[in-house]
Image (cartoon, rainbow, N blue to C red; front, side):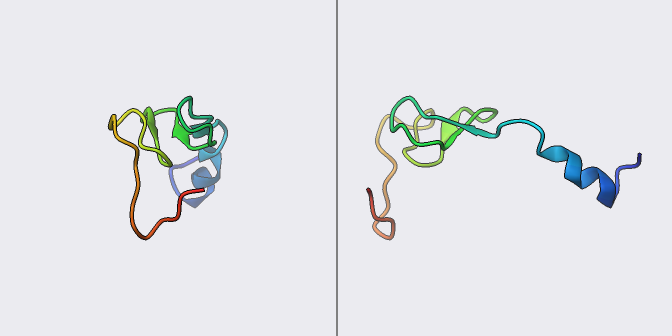
Length: 55
């Protein structure tokens, strides 16, 4: 098998996001060790933007 188009489908075997220990959402990146929802692992402050409504 080459590195072309057929190989692209083999990239989704494992889990990318797991449950975050701070916010509880399923948005903690297992490789980067950063939560895309609350910013845990990157900042001590909570990730928030004016255009994003918090639940």
